[in-house]
Length: 498
Image (cartoon, rainbow, N blue to C red):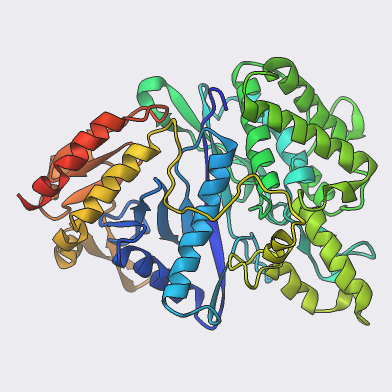
């Protein structure tokens, strides 16, 4: 998509006989121990990480542990097909590790956002901006779009019939149920916001910032994933250019929850100056502005505009036309069939199992996988999943090339884990107990400053890779750096072992 850059972060739930924290640690270790898909990154990268908490893959993505679960951060993408392929690759890597350990019937990974026990798992999106995401105009312009986007991007969730107050015990969106504030600077401890105000540079030299969206659901449908990313990228570009939708929500949290709790429709939102209006009309305001500004620009844009229009028209006239495309509708039809055949109806506890089965990454036990095998879903990709494929038109390929060079040089064998722990680890006293914590490393400049290359032989980051003090930088995510990456990869082994 022209002038667009996007990526996603998937937090995978797990189920089975292996406790989630143990499962995450085990599979992370398996993925990187044989260097089949990537290599471990020895340095702690966040305040709550330990050495070797995660690593980078040959496809440019990163896999790591976060708060007791596995998280996959995709590489930077510029096409909708490639972001879908990146998400498919995440599932393929996890499934390969599970199968390699012969754990297929003991451990299951699930791409969704809740365990139906009151816990939620995040799904985050990142988009390129030229202005700060803290701009009041940007926040005001995004709010109506994000609260109504679930109409085509929701993953769906069955709920306790007793909590449905006589209505359909089903929510359109999983994440909407856990939203507590309109905006927040924090992700984990600042309430779960519709809009996250984290303001970080995406590419300092180009002046690009990162829009961090944390209110979305993880989709199984390739169509829904692509439409969600494509439409949001177009809206971000509109607002980045100064366009104002002139829609002012009365209460964002109330709106997103009310729409989600009413899958049967009609869907309305309350505007400060106009009262109740159709949520579909709100979405059409954004669609029409995007069509006016960008139609005919590139194939991804035109596909997004057509799919967006198709969804809004289908939701208005006959939502069942969107079975196989929109997750919450596709799953609802399956749950309805089951409930209709059950003596307990929607009170049947097995509906929760069927709900979770829709999201399994293992296609042999996945309800969505079964629908896909029967040709009942619309795909954007074809053929087997290639977890090693890197996106084009970004620095992801260069990152993946150097990660492969590090793996070929067996760089992880150069890591003295006890030395890293001795240099970065410290005991901290909290609540009268001692905890081992680690000094995290945000940038290779810290290793230069403190002489850390002696115990951290290499450091992989989104914007570059350092090996024994030699650093290959990739400051612009829109550049491919092919020749430079090949040259650095060629000398990697020498830097490590010379």
